[in-house]
Amino acid sequence: MDRVWVEDRLRDRRVIPAAATPPDDLASSRGDHDLNAGMDPLPPLKPAAVLVPLVDRPGQINVLLTQRTAHLAHHAGQVSFPGGHIEPDDGGPADTALRETEEEVGIGRRHVRLIGHLDTYVTRTGFVIIPVVGIVTPPFMVRPDPHEVAEVFEVPLAFLLDSSNHHRCTASFEGVERHFYAMPYGRHFIWGATAGMLVNFYDILIGRR
Image 1 (cartoon, rainbow, N blue to C red):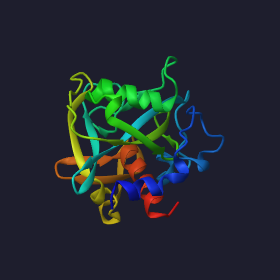
Image 2: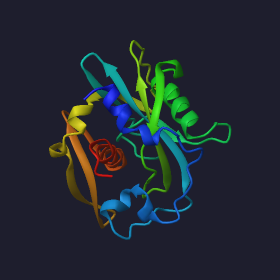
Image 3: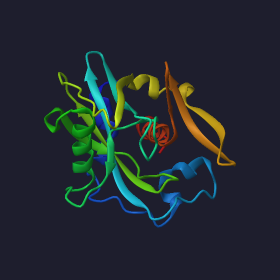
Image 4: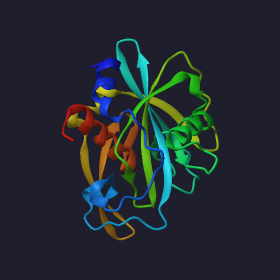
């Protein structure tokens, strides 16, 4: 597994969508509803984008992730990709992903080469997310925004593409039983939307979808 192999697997996904629009049918998108039949997102749906940063390290590819700070309004304390709302001044999802990556972790656009995208992901909290995949070339400095990011860390892509590390978990949220993917890695618990997008990445690269 190397950068060339990943790019080849994404060759049909190089044209990044110009906008994140709510799907006409949830079944046509990925999302929290994958494991929770009948779980409709909370309106109004908000367009967003994230960067799936693949760090091209010697001998392996790592995925860069962030641990969000505990006081944020959405997904506080969770592991996530850098990203956020698509603002009116952004030039589309790709521009949002690059802007948010620079703002959240300090990695500038010059270090990132976009190579494709994953499926649109819809969250229960009402976000319609386009995950944009980019190769991040070292050396680069990481400067986390202390308001949003508690930690920046990397996970080997090989670990995330090993299906034995994909767990289906169940928990009760506000009295309702919820099912979700999780990928524990060391002291980090990768779960929810981030794990769901990584499962989609696995499906695309390994060939299930």
